[in-house]
Amino acid sequence: MMLALNALESGYGAKTVVSNVSFSLAPGQILAFLGHNGAGKTTTLKSIMGLLRPTAGEILFDGQNIGRLSVADRVALGVRLLPEGRGIFPDLTVAENVSVVAARNVGAGAMFDVPDIYKLFPVLAERRDTRAGSMSGGQQQMLALSLAILGTPRCLMLDEPSIGLAPNLVERMFEQVRDVCKSHAMTAVLVEQNVAAAMKIADRVIIMNSGRIVFDGDPDEARASNFWSYY
Ligand SMILES: Nc1ncnc2c1ncn2[C@@H]1O[C@H](COP(=O)(O)OP(=O)(O)O)[C@@H](O)[C@H]1O
Ligand SMILES: [Mg+2]
Image (cartoon, rainbow, N blue to C red; front, side):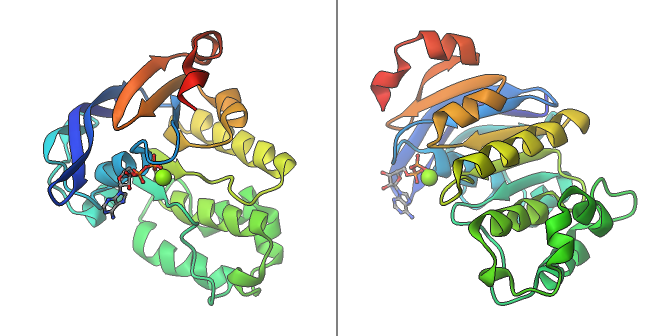
């Protein structure tokens, strides 16, 4: 398994927000990680990334317990998060954004080096010298995705990447995420309010409610179930 959570419990200070969260994902598997606002999705992703320290449970990555590693060490192993609200440097140009992150995350034999990013998103190559914050929402999100995959990502977590994007752009971006994951055996965890778009590319659906998993199955089972009542 690429990523496995065993009875993860996490929160803020004395406040437990998620508990008993368990699932495991194989390489190439795409998980739609759903649930209403406040369900604990971001808290779970931050715990996997190392931005929050779990109070109980295990996080296994490729069989290794990474629960005590620093964020930087997890990034080096290939754990990547496209954070809620983007995560680009708006005052730097596109090329500067890419080179700052590449300097840190691209090593020898990397899966995605700078030229690979520009090949994947030609519009970013055209916009190399544009200030990132002045681009359209769709282009900024492509840049955010590029920064997240620079180097050798093995588990890509996307926290509400479609916010503010036009529906046709969302579909295109998600198809690109799926293609990249499938062709590189990369695991993805996609947190989305756009449930229909997320379920189109997902192999697996988990729904959180009040910090617990209330549904775990494939997209067809999810569509047939009464999980919509959690929204
Ligand atoms: N920094 C924080 N400090 C304290 N409580 C927080 C913090 N961030 C989120 N929470 C609480 O944790 C719960 C889950 O939040 P979150 O994981 O962001 O949910 P989701 O991403 O599913 O919308 C919410 O009740 C929220 O108020
Ligand atoms: Mg969130």
